[in-house]
Image (cartoon, rainbow, N blue to C red; front, side):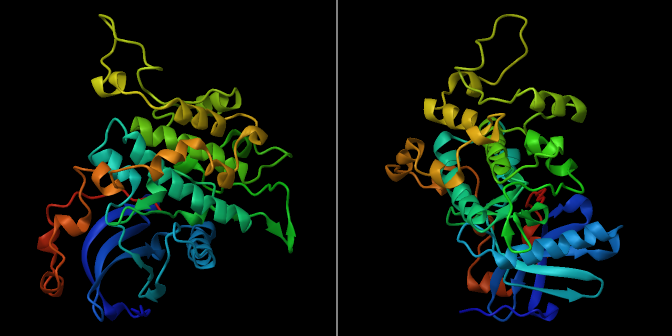
Amino acid sequence: MTTFKGNFGDYKIISILGECSEGKAAVHLAKHIPSSTMVALKRFYMDKMTNAEQTYSVELEIATAKQLQHPNILQYHTNFVHGFDVYVVSPLMAYCSCRDLLNQHFNNGLPQQAILIILRDLLCALAYMHRNGYIHRAIKASHVLVSETGKSCLTGFKYSCLRVLKGKWQNNVHSFLSDPKPVLNWTSPELLEQNLQGYNDQSDMYSVGMFICELANGSEPFLGMACTLMLTEKLRGCVPQLLDCTTVPRQTEGDCVISPIIVNRRFSKDLHEVTGLCLSRNPNHRPKAGKLLNHSLFKSIKKRTLSLNELLKPALPLSDKVAFNREDVENLDVNHFSNLALCTWDF
């Protein structure tokens, strides 16, 4: 078993994979020199943190990730300080994030089978978090990463909070996001209201509904809408829907151009139903993460003939974009990665 130590000299940075936290952090592709293993090295630029809350968010992200041990939650091998920066070492998720897949290969959304496989893994991670008293509060495509084997892992824990206060389980919490802007489009109406009723882990299930829409449609929910209008629409119960031949009317002359992919595809009735349930205005009407895994929607996954890797083609994992045999790993340099697109990871 490979041991990852908090020694900066053990890692050789190969290339930048993307920036996150509004430029206050970056994710690098790196080689763990003792084992020749490729890893993701996240670097927090602490000198760019302008207040105590931003510094605390780094602490929270690392501490929460260490507390959570589940196959569908991104694990941190180790973390350490070097110079003015904090580094976190994690497994390389070769397909990057779901948002990267949408941006680079699936502008009109993923096929339904791919959505279901990713959604199942996400729900497994959420069910585990909720059982342990955590609310994620930031479910979105850029916070779900896909490995080379097709396993999806949840990240983005700097937004999370606990339902346990002084050893007691709270029915509802009143802890609100200090900087909600990056996740506003996916946030539930009850969390945005900030009223005396508070919210619970069912807030995450609303975000799951938004996440399904994002994967299916290819774009962020409420993209381009003013924040105040979006808040009003959410409080009124207005939500996005899955775009297919049942929800988008056939074009007539003079209409704006809609992709033929959208007007010719059909998502299943079950997927439409589950999305609508998750986006219910009343949190009590939303399904629990664990119970949703038993929905008939997921039966088709057991019968599938194509793996997630095949469903994601033409997207290729990082290991296929460059040859990761032992000799190549020994001699990796930045030039090997000059043709890789920069990802906008935000976890």
